[in-house]
Image (cartoon, rainbow, N blue to C red; front, side, top):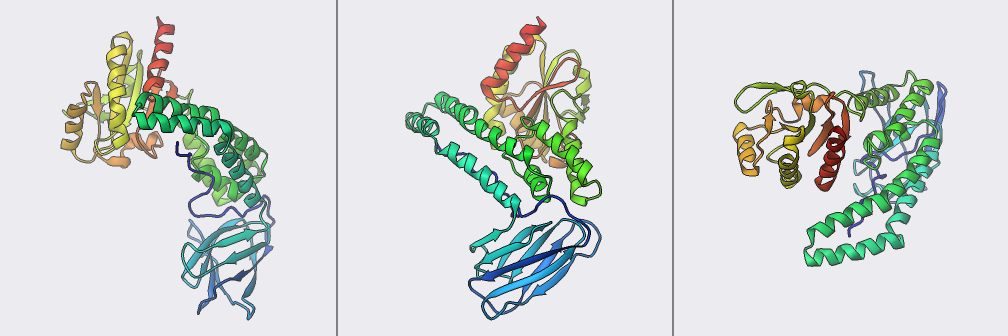
Length: 378
């Protein structure tokens, strides 16, 4: 079995922040360049607001080392440009940094020292790597290879689920415990907002706790405010919350609302013709509809297609006989925005009172959940 990719390594920023900061704090950035090039090293601030970003050059000394002192008023994201050959994204907060870089190619080696957050990331990585290398993980991997050779799709799916639940979820739970104890920092905020290691539903309490701490400790920080806003959006579609209303047209042009299904269990299923995983999951959804439709269960399909004929063709090809709606605006669909859709397939199960009770149920999990709730209803 292929190991789940290590998801604590984030796209872009190395986590080099530390909690707390006083206005006017002076940070020292020092380091060395392994392969110096003609030109300068440029340090520039990355901002999302209208304020002019800080930018300055750093001169390399004869011994290939450099040092720069910068006064910051609040934690922020910065970029080090080594001769337009290698770029390193960092966070400046409280700690002085020591950076080593090859500086001769985009994917060249670099190392950052002096950051408690970087140490936290290394701890998180070790938790995940140890789990992936454990005897239990290797045993499941061997079974997976055998099932793959046999073409046993049912067993493959069972083993994938076991790997997630018995190996990776335990590792992520341990990682979450570490994160809960870590001080609030830009690095921590970036980790939670951009890493897919922490499932937003499974670890929703972690997001709430961090948001509350950010509001208390960094009430005026731009990135803290952005994170708090991000968590507030997650709240709207959290399990236990009322499902946001959806009102969109069917292929025939009739506007249908989610609220019109009140009194039934409804699977709100976001999909599209162009989405391979959606099309692969559709047979499972069709099976669930046939089995439970007469027992108080409905489906509202919300397509993120752009072309009406593509949408209609996929409905017919996959035998999707339940209500389908779309405004053909892709991810600009208002429903996609209201449900914070970042990728599809995505689904929520709504109870007869319009409350979200489950999310992203796939295959046998959808069937089991429907059996559970519909038996209770009966």
